[in-house]
Image (tube, rainbow, N blue to C red; front, side, top):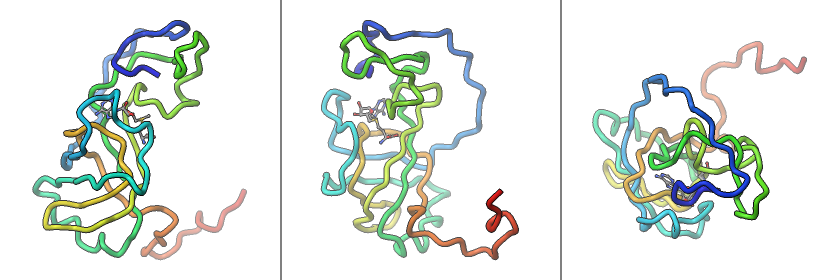
Length: 163
Ligand code: SAM
């Protein structure tokens, strides 16, 4: 895996298309203890440090009822990642794997996801454990964990479809 944008033996860089503007909105920023990619956890842990999701206006009202869930899914934009590799060498040993078989931050659209534990909500700030991103990483979305969440809207035919 690329740690600080270097290219390793066996890795393949492509000419990545110019990004289309997908209309993403940063709904907040994430505050964590980590300022270097060399120190940030590879994956968050539920007994890891408490991190802060600072929500920007006008989205703060959207936190209503979030406390109903113990576990959340957080999506974030790994903003310092390169986006032009198709093969990567996580072990830096000359062997490389396709990016879609990895959870590497280096991908065409550097979206990170973590399942985190909700610690508390203080006004516009959500406190969680389980993140693995740099301080000031842009926040894209927060959702209840899919295992805890049951749709509130009435069922639709596709819900029962198996073939
Ligand atoms: N848990 C997420 C996932 O599976 O989608 C991200 C996993 S990724 C392997 C975590 C690593 O991304 C960290 O160890 C760090 O090296 C890197 N990273 C964290 N924040 C970043 C950022 N804002 N920009 C670029 N790289 C970042």
